[in-house]
Length: 236
Image (cartoon, rainbow, N blue to C red; front, side, top):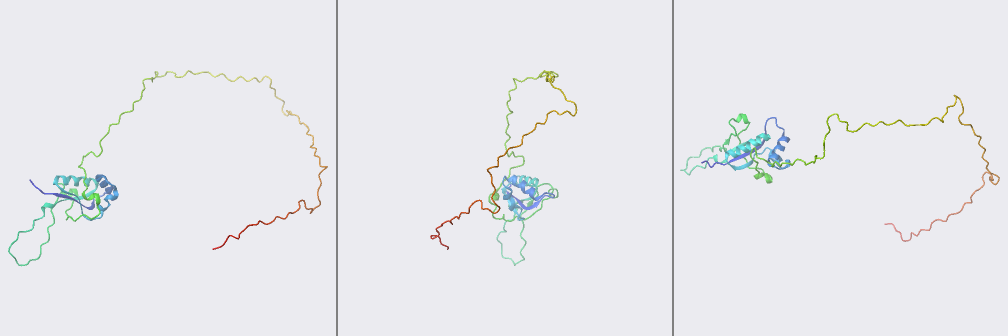
């Protein structure tokens, strides 16, 4: 049985047509964290989101992230070649290029999924809880459904009459009875109320006098200035 272990790697690439802000919100929902905590994942550096899982589990994570709009790679870390055994010294030769870990395609066709091969780099520092974050497999129930009991309303005392039944009998209201037998109307132009003379107002002014122009009606009184003790006040 194969002992290969795989990693899910993300380098900030998005599915064609996906909006960055919406993808961040989707990824944050998958990880069950705030959007601010996944901002570092979109810096462009390659980050191993999930480590040490089998290939099937890694591809489940990859497909879930792909639906969220993030393009990831599944990397087989155990596929890197082992160091060669010790041998007799040989003439120096140009150093061979390092062999990158093999990248597993998540679906039958890489072109269909838009995934690319890449070399895994160490995750950037400061990821905090996301360094070992996990996501649930597709189809996992995140919140258990709770049955809500229907409201219990007692309608046993209510009933309905047949269609067309008059619920309230119409009652005739008699017109008001106003006695106008004592009223009469005058002829056009008739004065209905006679003018009553008003006696002129009698005001006794015999005791009132007027002073000459310029006379002083009220004598001026000198007002002493206020005495305020400022001996204890000083200016800094």
